[in-house]
Image (cartoon, rainbow, N blue to C red):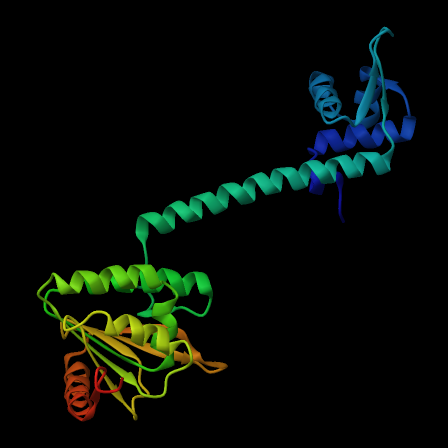
Length: 266
């Protein structure tokens, strides 16, 4: 059964307010007897109800006489105050969550190695973290993909541009193997890759359908395609099994040899 406590009143406050609704006007002593609230607590309870504008007090009478406001008005005020309190709490929790995300970044889940990236926020967060992992590479970065990879990287174009620019001044090798059959937005990524010159080697192959990144030949990130939106990722799996990575490197090498360089495709 619902009660005024669901809208923020204490049990004593509810008992006193309901008692006032029954008797309409009463002194503190009469309300203590009517509601069962101890006399030692009755004035604190009445002060609380007054502060919420739920009861009126006539200070000119002795002893003071209290009366309730209209129930409809009382419920509206309690509801309004409750909504305000909940909004303050919601804002506080959102700020806490934002601070925790900033502190921790994108971390692999402890119950597996799958990042969900279907929502835009989770996708942007993951790609930012992935580009940071690219930047921390010490030897080589391989990127293979079709429209899924294109969509991922174009969500954070500025960090991608900064990383590609840094590659020109670094010593790591970057090989990007893309499908020849990209979505319309693929032209934007190809234009960006052409501008990197020789620092990033990009090739196109007609049969590329997989989407993955391989960092320093030990950290493999497999992109899982969203079954209801083929150009978007559902999530990403982190794999470190040596045998699987070696097989993918061999297949990548075979595709790479057959692929057409980006400059030749212009």
